[in-house]
Length: 117
Image (cartoon, rainbow, N blue to C red):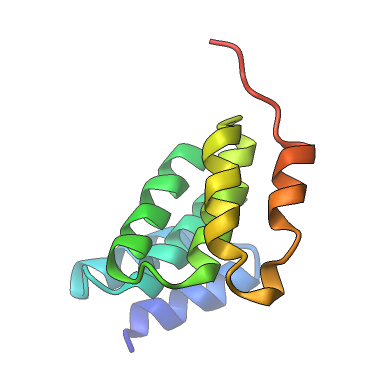
């Protein structure tokens, strides 16, 4: 496990999101195919309202570990924030294979509002 990941996690839990992002990016440079690092970077990006960038990181995590329901759930939440409702509901369905995410699809349908162009 990368020391940068550990430092990134520590920064994240203390609310130092910019530092967290830098550390996660360094961890990804060391291990570009590690889905956990991409997922954590996505969460840090969401914390500073960079939802489109977060979605790209969740996509990278999912590409490496498509069966991880947490990655799909996180992507769903980011998609809700940008108003991509159909995509959010699809991701919720993929997350709901894990019972701990049951109801995410209903949440997405109730809380997602398409954005006007």
